[in-house]
Image 1 (cartoon, rainbow, N blue to C red):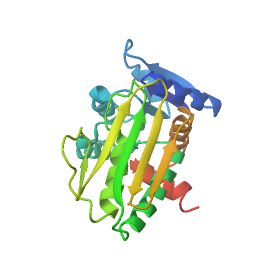
Image 2 (image 1 turned 135 degrees about the vertical axis):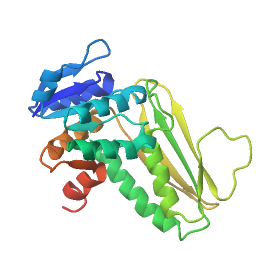
Image 3 (image 1 turned 180 degrees about the vertical axis):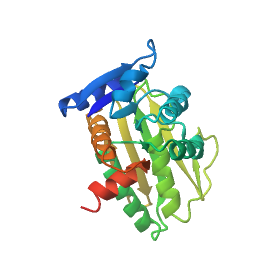
Image 4 (image 1 turned 30 degrees about the vertical axis):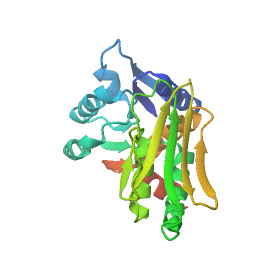
Length: 245
């Protein structure tokens, strides 16, 4: 594929490196200092957007307006997802987003879903979660953490509210606390605990580096290029390539 990259932060650079390693050509890369090169972008098979929440919607709209197939890595914009769905439908492009493109993280979330369904029937267990990300992470909690809390809320009936902020009170029985830490150069860790008086079960994903996230992004881009125009999520890829194989 010929790929145009919007965003050249550390994650964007890692995604581009994985693309090159898998034989894809970099046709254009947009940094903070240069403008869109529409000619090169229109010659590309896919746009990969990996920037920050403050500009991601502007970039998605640009791709839709110019009918450029787009895969979005950036998180922190999901309150506008219905608007983006409308833009994609009107434009007729291929579009994909995910809170996390790591195959390992998504397998982890599938395991978490199954565990939550079991814990739902074991009322002696309380629930908590925590994540650690590097010091350059701009959103807190992360999109992945929000996906995890959604899984817990959907599958554990006695928990109806997640608390993400600092607590200065006793937590209520219907709540669970999901905390976040930011620090270090390459931290990517998520853990959920199921805790009783007798024992604790912890389910952890700990990434060594950005490679798994970047490789998953490129593999999803390869898959997206083979699909009909439409609005796709990581679930579509996983159900097609991993869980139903």
